[in-house]
Amino acid sequence: GKYIRIVKGLYETDPATPGYLLAGSIYGPSYLSFEFALSYHGMIPEAVYAFTSASYDKKKKKEFKTPFGTFMYRDVPKEVYPLGVKLIEEGDYSYWIASAEKALCDTLYSKSPVANQKELLNLLFNDMRIDEEEFEKLKLEDITNLAKKYGSTNIQKLSRLMRRR
Image: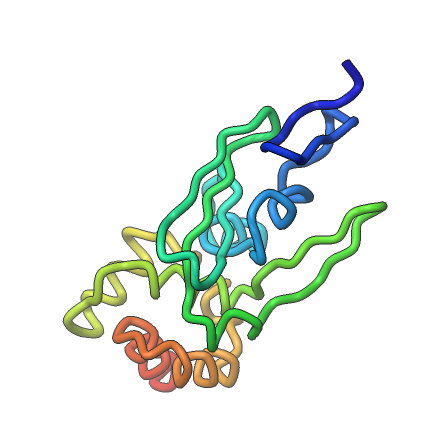
């Protein structure tokens, strides 16, 4: 009764452990990104109730429902996987999380391509509800460097948009 099963072969003893501390152990290699990281960095106003992570070479989305929450994993290109992530240590745990710039690029990579800048603005500020003040704080150099590696129409358009602002 002292062990809480998370997934096959992985257990936790403290039922109060925050799920984000477990995300990298459930399925990996992976780092927290997408909506979770956008919320973590204050880029979106909504609270996020799933732990969204990026992985690579898995070829399909994965989802795990556990006593600690729902964990979702999506692929990003292998070339960009290690870029723009930071290791954070918290007590006896450590976890990898995307920077605000990387989380935004990962998210845009996972969306259908937009046709033009107007559609990108609508996607960012209406559909994704990106906070405009936080958007202005993003580092252009980081977005530009990431855009070169993703090969994504959306991220190329984001880089051009940011250069114009």
